Length: 464
Image 1 (cartoon, rainbow, N blue to C red):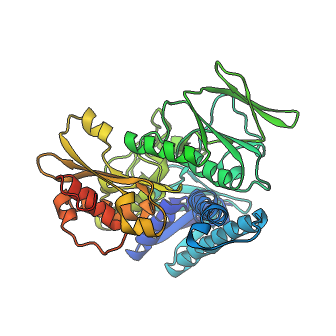
Image 2: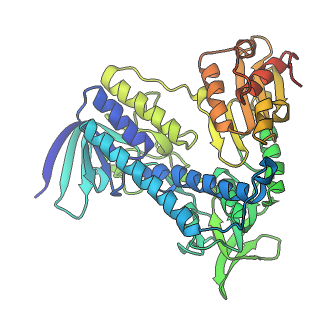
C-alpha cells in the first residue's frame, strides 16, 4: 500500500540549489519537503566536489609552502613529511561537519526530508523510491534540483580506481607517481595542482588549443604560464581515444600519438545534467539536445507546476548560481517575484594563484561589436601582495567605451576569489570604472589592485 503525503513544495535534490531553495521557501511560509537519495545532505558540491577539493587545495598548498616558501620569511623548517592519511581525514571531517550543518538547518526551518530517489509520477506527484514502503508526495509545486554528474568520454572506461573521475581523485590512498588528467577545465587544473604539489608528475591532456575554456582568453593564457612554472605539463590539441589498465599501468591512447603511460587517470572533461530516472516523460518534459531541462524566466518547465534550477538547466554549472536560482524560484512561488542577475555571477578556479572572472570576456565583447576600454594592474605593484610574497598575476577591468559602465573583471592573483565579489557587486549595481576608482580602498590591501585597474581604464593608475 502506498502512503500519500502532501506539501506546498517538493524539491528533488538537496545540493546547493535544492537545500537553499528549500530554506528560503520555508522562510516564506511554505510547507517544504526535500528528497535526497544520499544520507548526507549538501549534494555533489559539498560531499564530493567544491568543499573537499578546496580542503585538499589548502592542505597541499600548506605543504608546498612549508617546503619551498617559508625560508624567505626567516622560518627554517626541519625535515618535512607528508601524512596523506591525516590530510584526507581532515577533508572528510570538514565535509561531515558541513553536511550535518545542512541537516540542522532543515530541522530549524521545519523542512521534511525524505531519504530515497525522487521521481515524477504525473503532474503534482512525486514517488519516493527507497528500501521502505512506497511513498507518494502530492504538491502544488515540484522543483527539480538534481545537479550534474561527470561527463563521459568515448573510449574512456572508468573502473572506479585507476581510471576515475574527481570522486576518486579526492581520495587517492597514495600519491601517484604520474597522474594523467584528461581535460584542462576547472576540475582538471585544480585536482592536478593538488597532486602536483604533493609530488606527482601531472600531465594534462586537452582537446582544445587552450585551457579553461569559457574564461577570458588573456586570463587563461596567463594561468597556463603560471601553472606550467609550477610543474604541470599541458598537451593541447590532444584527442584521447581510449584508456585501459595493462600490466599494472594505465595506458592512454591519443589520436596520432604514441600511447602515454601513468599510474592513474583522472577524467575531467566537464559535467552533464543529472536527469536519470526522474520520470520526466510522465509530465511530458523533453530535454534539450545537450540533456538540460528547458525552463522559462521563472524556472518553470513545459509541465505546469514543475520547475528546475541549477546544473540541470542551461548556464554555468556553479554552486552559487544554483543557490541564487533556488532562492529566486522559492521567492517567485511564494510572492510572484524572483530574479537572478546572470551578468553578476562570478566564477573562480582555486589554484595558486586563484583565477576569477565575472561579466563579459574580451572575446565576447569583440564578437558582439561592443566598443570597450581596458585597464590592467599587476600585483607586483601592490604593497600587500609584496608583503605576503604573492606577486604573480594581475587585475583586468573592461568598461564600456561610451558609458564607462563595467562590463567584466578578470583576476589572476592572490585571493582573486574574494576580490571578485567586489567586482560582481559593482556590475550588479551598474557601476562605472570611475565609481570603483573613486572608492577609498584600505591600504595596504589586495583590493587596491582592483581600484588601480579601474583607474587604468582612463590611464590614471597611480602605482604602476
